Image (cartoon, rainbow, N blue to C red):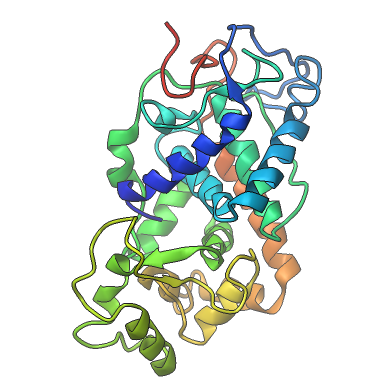
Length: 315
């Protein structure tokens, strides 16, 4: 969920991956026994055996230094995959980093996005060791301009959100799990004030509404990601990817309107209750849905390219 402005911290977080990044010599990635869509587990086992290990090490290091980056990596994958394909097209002409130093010309920017999101989820206390297939290649055209028309915003109906995710192969159960990523991070007041002024939305628990008005004391909040006025998605475990999100929905403490609607819509309410009662179930469904989303229309084989620099197409 979000707007194009939310890509600013995403790009900044990916810039931190410059520890991993450098020029690319154009060597193709090696892989055998690929599936019909060109993706496979351990795709780089021969061409860059430590690729996934290196990404995991660097994600851990960066998380320990800048905890919020793990949230941004999850958001980056969602934004990239929602706009046509998981192909790193949204990194073109941004301030993001380039390619894997250990194996120049081998690991695609699209795979770096997917692997960083997977390992970021684990660092946040989410499911560990999600089996993520790799072998994606990078787009040669930016899709940044299509973000607004492709990504559901926080005021969307449940139908609109379900339809958008369904186009990526994610069902209602998976949607309820993936939106559980809203358990971590924070939301700027600009995206909240419509639920708070002139009167507090009736679906918000009264005490929670009072808290939110304290965090966002005016309806004149700015659309600025640098604005310090924000509210935490989860006040109990704010940096843990757990089912506190679903528990909060059942208490009327959904921060965004689309979140709260999940608790009452007949297509999603049952899954909200099940996940609120069972964190392991939430993690299992989240892992499967993340993989499904990460494999939306990948470029493989001779499609696209492995970029020399994630910001620019190869010359």
